[in-house]
Length: 539
Image (tube, rainbow, N blue to C red; front, side):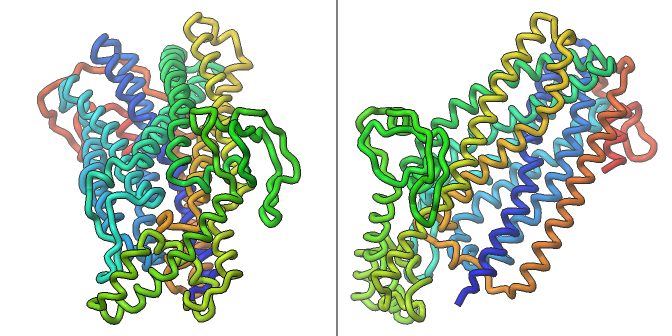
């Protein structure tokens, strides 16, 4: 029998590594395209200030990229070490996009990063600009393939369970790639990264302006960041609605938890602006509502009913009862795959196999044939994720998104009309805004992943079945170890970033590009800019 404490510790460990790693990802996604935009202006205008901007922000990008890679590599190993049953169950599907990500996107961006940093003297302007764009595209392709893998966990498409091999098997690579959840989440996550990059560039630029340092570079960087940020923030708010619409159909339990909607209400249902959910009592201690808003917000109609938690829980109980025969048939097929009667029984109930797995946790001796109505009721209640966490994480994310939109509108207005440096209070605000998009990204991740519970693969594989059978001591040791190591990585990131920002960009006329290779002493390219070279030494 699986030790529930081991499952919880496995979840905590993966959550910790993912949360740490996701501090690096949005900045990598966002700042890469901003660097490409800066270099585009340099190539088209020939103004060396934009080359200095490209090199300076490129140095910070490199620091973030290297430490992001260091925190991300361990996550793929965790699937095999801590989630062995999950890896066996869906490895044929989940492994495919991760393999493509490693072989195509990661190698692409890591290869071209070297050319971007050290290729200024070796490549022509156009060639170097192409390399910079390939780095940006590679970074975003990496996110795409990872989110395709995650999309399968959220809404399993393109695969079917084989009762002979006892595994999920890929039957449509196209359905896997074009999963609506994966595509909507990729666009939403990527644009959130652009917002993060824009706020970071604007905040650092504001810090320079407050100290009257590198004024020309800071002023131009801030303006580009402000314009970039207005478009990106408007996009992330708008496309967040599209992701919510997809989730409403794929994961109605997540949606009901996001809205703390315990009871199904007639359309158009009210929207809970704020509430205090009580999970055990399945009600809100108090709530502040706006009438008639929820239905059009979620369904884009005034008449479609949004199912509440009571209705969803009742539907889950029905599916659990229907899934029990599938689990019983699977037990027979595991010892005799040619049993025709068992195969027929499995085929008749296979769509609810995952729900049958849910009740094994409570049935006597994990024998679903012994499951009582009370066991089924417990399993049905498990299908509702932690409402209070999801409800408030979602509202924090939305509130921060609206705050960033208002901030960027003001930033663009002040920058365009040339009054930015007169608003010192706003410049100070810009510096303090730097952590905001990171917090918004982390709360969005919590909504997506906690909202999927109690499933690792929604509707197919419960989380309690997915974990490896480690000891509690091993899990505690590894959890403490990972948190300690990743905390060191964050400290190193902060130190290198702050050191590079305090040092500032190199302000000297840049030599023209050359298409000829230059001889070098010490492993670099002769005449390479000091900023990228120093970043290379630091890392």
